[in-house]
Image (cartoon, rainbow, N blue to C red; front, top):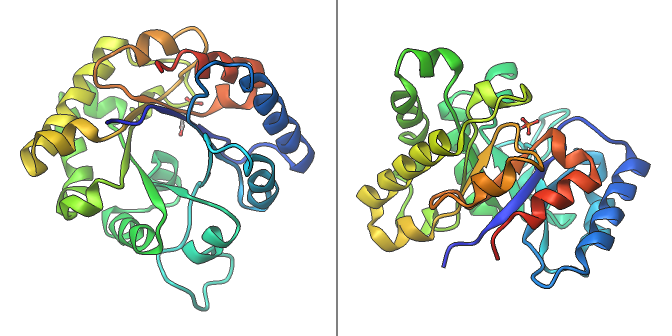
Length: 254
Ligand code: 13P
């Protein structure tokens, strides 16, 4: 059975008091819903521990880190390991976000190393893929996505892959207010699922959670989440406002 969920990527926003306030507002709003949605919060590193403590009593809330280092430990000043994250209650980690790929030059080799390290450490990877505007305009969307899936994801064993969450985030839709139409997003999600079907068979493909990310908001979430192959969202800007994020959570089918 496929898990439907919404993940909030807070990126480099919020300080301690605003993170506590936002988390508390979400917990207060959600407690009245008949079917509590599955929610993943991804605060910046210094906020993980306090958000972890706040969400601990709520089993439908999980905690993700936005990044980590692929080594087990060592002299890597300024970096954070998977085990450190585990020790403060982190269960998931975002890998391959387009901002890491573009702004921090994280290439496929590094992302594959992170994917393996996360799985070894017992963290659930939220592995992001997505094409740029020029890829799309030049009809290279599926070539780009293949190049991002092949080195790491498609080389996993079936058992390892079954732990992974995929996020499709078209780069041209991130933080731009331009959302992929439900038809555009569904077309890509169905294609992604087909790659998993070819690799590991129908059951594994059907059970994989594939999130859509890129300007998801309270107005477009229902339509996106009602598409057959879209299992929820990875939300940036709109996850920073409690009321708007609550509306997005309510749009998630039970
Ligand atoms: P926006 O929702 O702000 O477009 O960001 C999407 C994103 O990058 C989530 O990881």
